Image 1 (cartoon, rainbow, N blue to C red):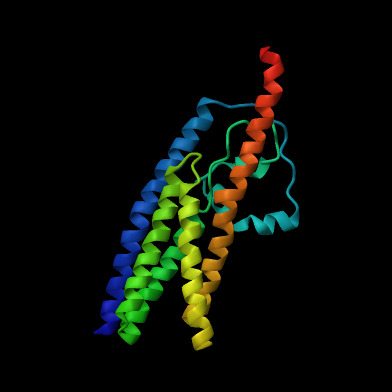
Image 2 (image 1 turned 180 degrees about the horizontal axis):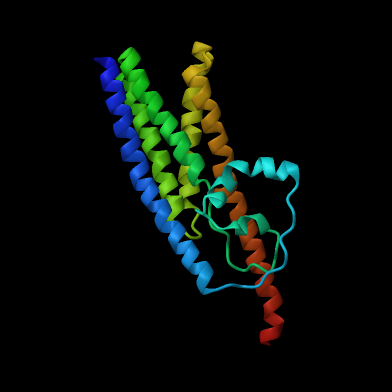
Length: 212
């Protein structure tokens, strides 16, 4: 009976999680493609990324590869781009949220832990909400900041469980995944925004003498 409940719960979780997220992703992708066709701004040839940079940005580049985000983030140092790059982390937050939700369901099925079900459902839903928020946002970093806060709390809780149980599954795996989500959401939510402000401030200062 528990296996039937597990399969049904996991199927319901996947449907509830991926249907709204997928619709939001498709909508954002169509909007970005429309904006690209309407206005094509000539820019300088993008610099080639190093191997280390490719490894570092691999989780975030999934959004660009799937057409969910433009590739303006790759050229943050290019001062010719005045518009801020769109936020990334849709696939990362959705994957970690799904993993956390599935872990909560399995904990309830195997051990009968209602606390595991509630915690996994809450953290998973918040991470999926942050992914949907990032997909809908054009320049706002609120989705990444929400993901950073949720992933930080989740990493703290699961690290404590991992130290106590000394078992990699599931606490160690979720702690590792949430730690990765913390790093990339902090980067996208706070550090990239600072670089955008530097670019816009430098471009405005260069344009000031021309207006005079």
